[in-house]
Amino acid sequence: MRKAKWLIYTVLIGLIPFFVRLLFFIGFKNLSPVYLLNEIDFAAFGLVLYVTNLNELQENYTGSQDWKNINIGLCIFALVIYSIVLAVAYFTEIDTKELYTNRLKIKYCSLVLSALSLVYSYFICGVLTDQKA
Image (cartoon, rainbow, N blue to C red; front, top):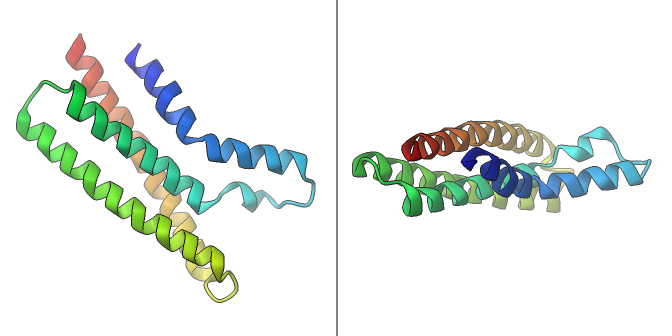
């Protein structure tokens, strides 16, 4: 049940910006498929995942305090990294011509980071699920 709630309350809510972008893509014919892969959406998704991880670890984990502290530290570090990526992504939207190559790098970086965050968040959810069993 915990994994189903994680999928609904964390993953789907974290993907809301992507779903909105998908609706615009379907509704407007002049948008390219690249429009769907926005670095800001991926950074927001990662932020949602790590805020949820942080909350779950602080509220629901009752195992080893060292393991808990290490993972809380990792979540806080990841939140800082995502905040930086988000700030840079917003900045590259302002000046798209000069920073186009940097924008592609931010896009790829945020895409990879989001995928890793999804795996890590699933791992945390699994640890908490196994803990309750």
